[in-house]
Image (tube, rainbow, N blue to C red):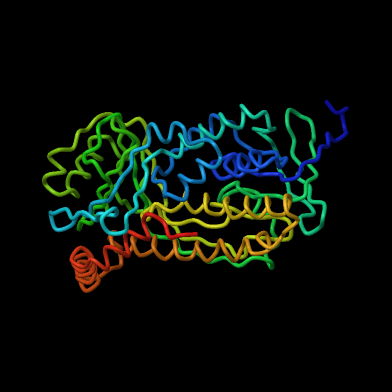
Length: 398
């Protein structure tokens, strides 16, 4: 331990801020490639694992986890889905991804992805710092970036070649960039998703996206015995105002009769409201600081893109760093922001479209409702429209 008043200093190639799935995946990919790195996280491991998030993985994300050597449980426990169902007008319509484009998605909770990455990192022995206080980023516009933090009363400094900001929407990484150097694009939606997790079998084999006059609903799952359900609520609602009975009643109202009858209810083991927003920060590189995942962009969860976009960012960044260190080639690092943002904006478009298609907006008039109904009717009746939805949902090629 450093003496009182001194700084405990160390050096590494890449300092990764944030131990969520983006930061841990980047760290694992770099470790596999033999590139020194450290992960610095302000929260505890238990807090990180306690965050309930998405569970739909694109093929690109599955391949990234395979490349990182952490796909064992995913292959055993993940549920491969070949399509989704759209529910409106009292009927369900299946979008068959496999028949339309020959691809699919995998249901595997983000918590489990994080758990697998944590275990792999611990097994590799590479350094991870949890509960780091007062994390700050310095000199990333120079050749000698630094990350400073305090741990157990001791001040620490990490000198590195590059900093990867993977610490989410509210993290320190994006906030460290001077305001004149970044451009923000944002849309905040006037509603959120009230979600519950329950130890009950899913109501259907695949996800059901429901559009109803009372609002949107989603029937999802984490396994064959654990379900995740959502209903659209005004942004002013609070989870504590919703009893389990009230939630189940509202969900039934928004489902088609067959799904409502088949729904198995039970006590919730988690209940929360997720606000919906679209957000992009440009560019995603500032000197030797790279932003990845929610630190750079947020999408409404309707299109199942959040975790998958983060994995895509991390793959671009890992490839760039590996090319730089192993081949003295910085072209991919130089192209990082441009490549990521091209994919990010396509995902933003798809997520916005899905949100607009399925939700009830408080300021929408009768004309808007009829247009929404016509869009849904056209979608399920057009193979071309279904194919477009399918290729966007399973993930566009990198």
